[in-house]
Length: 382
Image 1 (cartoon, helix red, strand yellow):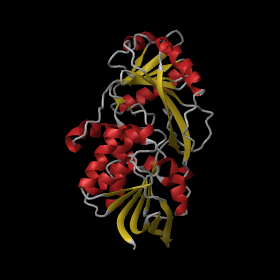
Image 2: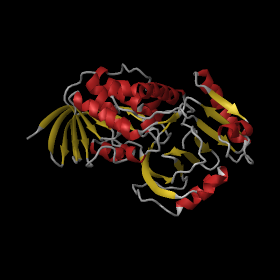
Image 3: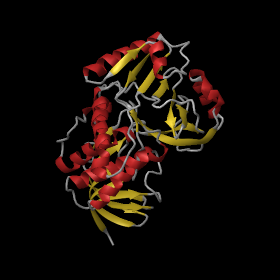
Image 4: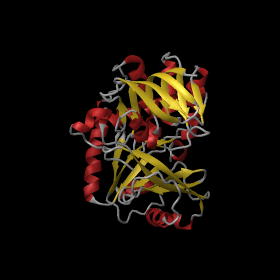
């Protein structure tokens, strides 16, 4: 038997859940989420480090963060779920004058947009993190409006509220093919039956390209592994402790359950779907982490986590439909920013479906067709 959905959302992570909730809140009927795993958020959401920041290099991403942070602040009142959003701040520490010049210019643009970012000397950075090694630093930037939040709680809140508003969330249901008639998607086939659909929202994260290919669309998103490690509790970590990023090495850390979450991006990591923790990589992370915060040298590691970024060519999200299939809406390529931009992005996608081009945030920087014209990439990517 063929069933019917006005909007079919492929992917039950934080983006899919946010889109589902916002569609239902706008009164869109028959919204169905298809999640191939047994639990929601088993992909990138479940491996997220939880950072939330205004310190982006593009105006579009700053505004996406601003609107999402407002949503996090209201989340408990609106959804009855505590998401532990804490404004611990982000501290970028910089080891050479070239990087410092870039961050100084970024800070000027950010302040013009109302972002309370500060330029710091190494000594001022050490006032925020007393155990910080500043011997090879030339400066830093800090924004007290940045912080961390709980991605699992955010996902839970959106999913629960979406279901209360009538959204169907189907787990262990995998989309296997997409049918088109002319330039429109008309149906999905799944491992549990066929669905006629009015719109499809691709919220499949690192698997976005595979879903797009089913509709004849090439979505330029690649999966890339990212890893972090969590230590046992340590009594020397102050509270609050900012999310600290050593820009020279890509090493980042923040307080996690009394210990420290420490990770690092690997510029040599090839695209792929592997999510096994590489314990040899821990040596590199430990070296860079303990250089910047020497007390980390004595830390004991509890666990390692490996997950996937969904990376676009310019490290910006792809939001909207290609001209060839106007009822196939992309919500992909967040390049590590999906959790922190989920509220604003989900609302914008819902508005695209329900209201056409009338959205509460400009999506020009995220348009599907932007790759045909010159576009500034996001610089502040961790």
